[in-house]
Length: 381
Image 1: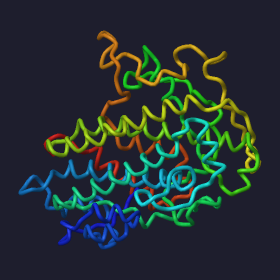
Image 2 (image 1 turned 45 degrees about the vertical axis):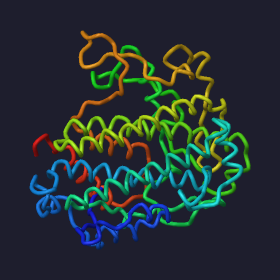
Image 3 (image 1 turned 90 degrees about the vertical axis):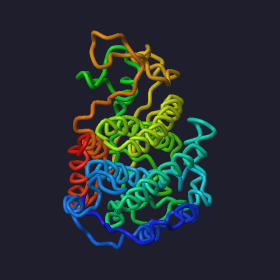
Image 4 (image 1 turned 60 degrees about the vertical axis):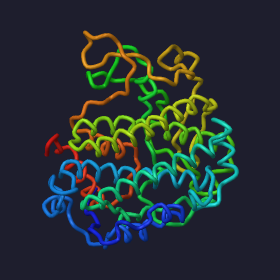
């Protein structure tokens, strides 16, 4: 992912909160931050910023970490907005779209409060992206703008806005190994362990998590499979953020930047625990996608050949497991948290998920450069 629109600024004291409440006009917001739309490389930003530990600035490494996190939050806001337009609550806090009653009803089978949770998760990610960018500007560092990459199509289902998107929710391969990873009492990916998929069929092929058109609403079983896919995708996305923030926090130098990373990271954990609980309520269902021919099966995870603690649906808190060394006692932890390659690993995971199918080479270059800069950050840099 690369090529940032950047700039510093004379208007950085502008009332960002009032702009946020007016909605999703990122272009107006970024202009208020001084982003003028010039396309430059991330590498050149790092050589021109006045943020090298002097005055009120922050280090180049801390700025690189925050820029990657800002980009990640922009991407999260984009995907959550698509979910909210169709199955959340559309209001002044999260404007856009008009809802799809049939899809909303299918999603509500996972929990009657799903619309509110989707809305709140969307708003949270928007506040994260806006805050981190505003903080960067306040320290004389360049913010992140991905608007030039909003080229992917929207769902054509009634209720969705017809605008350019950054992410693709209609061709997903959803990794559900987080389910068994957080239930394992012996395994930790930081120690080299691997884990089975909870829902193997949605981890392969391309599956839609939102109705592509109103035709996807006509078959009740297929519609529920779409909603179930969304339910597991919610947790897949948020468990990534749950790990990303503590991974990058270990590279931060400035105490205030560390406070930001830890404080925002805590909300990602709250999101993940919400969605791991709701995913367990997905009704058992099998259906074939009438467009692609791909089949998906959501089994009863409490029954054979599943069942047991590794699949138990009411286990929503991390089970104790190996941490740092297998010679130490088991401990309930976020996992993984090893910091090596944290940003690039997150980017690779999102890409493998299918979120960026259809994106341009320039987008991938931009994001790779942001990830590389964040991963190269070291304490004191």
